[in-house]
Length: 610
Ligand SMILES: [Ca+2]
Ligand SMILES: [Ca+2]
Ligand SMILES: [Ca+2]
Ligand SMILES: [Ca+2]
Image 1 (cartoon, helix red, strand yellow):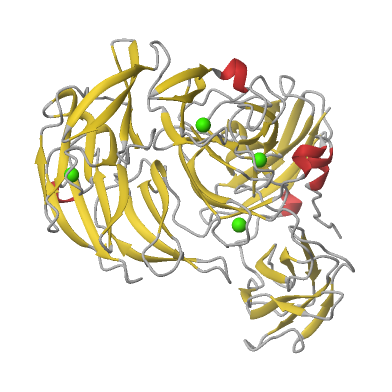
Image 2 (cartoon, rainbow, N blue to C red; image 1 turned 180 degrees about the horizontal axis):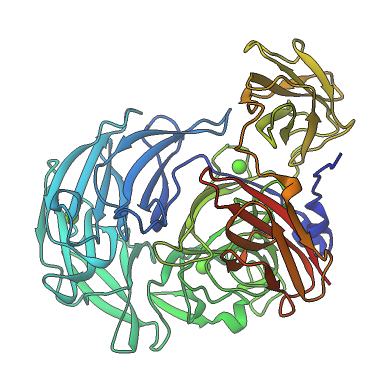
């Protein structure tokens, strides 16, 4: 029997000790999303419970107009499950939002990009909800102006003590335009012109933040037109007066740079990070709204394509680290955490030099039965950091399109990366029963994963009764020791045909604590069923092969798809009897063969290319 055990720690061990200090668990508690935004929001002023606000496209399909959504989810710390608590009823594809808290309310400003569809789901919106823990959002501003390639930030533009929203993008006011959604302070907003000194944007970014001790948020703007790009810091001088005070330089920024305003070097002054395909540049705050550029040659941070770079101290050494998500490939590109060193050009307390990138890994979403975790690599992505489980280690949420691509090619994903570094083994084990596979007339493969736990003794029980439990049902012993993030399976035989069975996976740790998975059900095939691909009728030879492989099937073949073990499709064929693999790299390939027999039969075969 094959045991599918994966030792991901091996990957960590070949890097250095710095990187070994981190461990993360990636889960998917929320809706899949890309080309939007993610952010943790606090609905309850009395607690630090976080909910996930997620906008963007939710599928990569061309089949139906995919306009996306803006939704809010609660997150259950005990189960790690997300629950949708509010659907804002708007299109989320290509949208942006900004959140602030004021006088007991949470406010969400929203700008949607979608054009040509139902106008009720697009344009500019503002909602607010009393911060009593309930998501009782009320829409308090609606305007049909559409900003595409949009950006929005919260800022008190007129210094009246009420936070407003500054919106930019290409709109029906102009190719690079902007507006202010002005907070009247009484629960209403009105759209007004932005101060003329603040440039409109298109595919660029506004970000407000505290850059001095004035108590006022200033504004960082990146923009560009006709191949020229610019970036400026605008000083909020109070009373609605804005002045351009610092030039971030030209030729730096491609589409949708991400701007972070945070004290990266721990000197008490917030710095500016601008991450784009032009590089990740840090502008160290020298005081008096003057800055010094540390470009990526100094920082060691990556350029990100359709990406973001954000900062927090992941390894609790007092130095802020960087997490990057984006589409670049290569050993030190996006999908990594970079540790800030204290030995760089600036020296203590922070060096603004980042070293030893730690690869972030996510569970496979194609052929999970064959694959270990795969590197995080997402375009049209966003990240928001917080300590979601209040254990002192920083966690984050990230969304994006896995491997990139427009609708029809994109694979949207939303992951929560929970920082599990240094967690002891005193946690109670958690085990998951996965759906049974290879179910036929009289046998099946029972599958399970250990979510939490070390050195578990594991087993299955199955029964035709739905009340199967870890002590009730036919016993099937599993491997003696199974650890966190590992999977196991057992083949059971002698089942009755056309019968529904219930199965459960169980694990007991060395403390004697038993974890029960959820009950899964499956139904065996009817004998005489024609739904089974006739394995005897299919021959694939020679295997291994050095060049051509022959397929001899008595069943008509509809198509053959060839995948790498990492789940990447590398060949699409119709009904062919020979496939030339001579141009393929040596290795193991999965041939998924679909029968053209009207009932969707298919089979997957492993082929070795020498
Ligand atoms: Ca205001
Ligand atoms: Ca600083
Ligand atoms: Ca650190
Ligand atoms: Ca945490």
